[in-house]
Length: 379
Image (tube, rainbow, N blue to C red):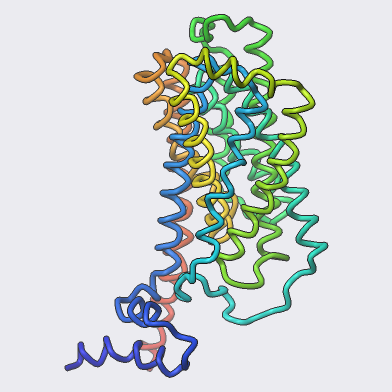
């Protein structure tokens, strides 16, 4: 009976709120999801980020590896997948997963402010995407992935000034290791260079990847600032979809302008005809690349909202070993000693960051337990 009452109480409390509570909400509350809803959201967002990032990077390399040449098109597919999110935008999500953290309604920001945020983020996103496409064209996918480890260091730098990010010895150790792991790639053997890529093109690809990575670190820090100060005024899922659709729509328009201005749109027919895997595969590679980047973006923005931009970048770093390992088998990338050391340092840096999160999570619980014990002993 005690267990029955324990299960029924949340349902009664939810029903007492009136017609606003749906059957789904009551069931989720009864099953105990309400208590762990934040960690469920974090887990889902982390899975979206890791799966979307890994598959999108591999497909992006596949596009260039089999005959693709357009940097503008490779950039466009990073953002043009936003229409697939529109049907999900109108889904009535359970309140347990969508309620504002404060639980109170507040005035929505003006359309002008929202437009300014979306346009600014979209411009930064478009620039980062183009720089990353240049890097993907001239560098092995394993090199691009490992260089991207420095994004955590860049994000930490910007978060310190924009979001008052606190640094502990473990976080500093993580940033140093991840930075060194990227710098090491400058000195690795040129034998891993892609066929037909000159030394100047390789250097350009490396520099563009670094700047694109720095821009991504800045964008995540700005997203955290906007979500906390401006956009977090309503349901969480609605905020995430608003931001993702707004910034990717802006980025898509910018890249479309560049695509037509550069004249690369004239290559499509010939590129499709000459593509190594055939016309159908050409379309499928572009389509699934666009979808995977949207999955990644949803997961990334969700983690920034639920935790922080620094945590989002740390999860992204966790996926670093996945892409280089698959790239060795799929694209015959060479995993030389420098890359192995770089990967080990990246993983070590991530573990250091996760350990700090562990300490942050359990320290308040230990303090609360000790205070309770002291109170009991005094009585």
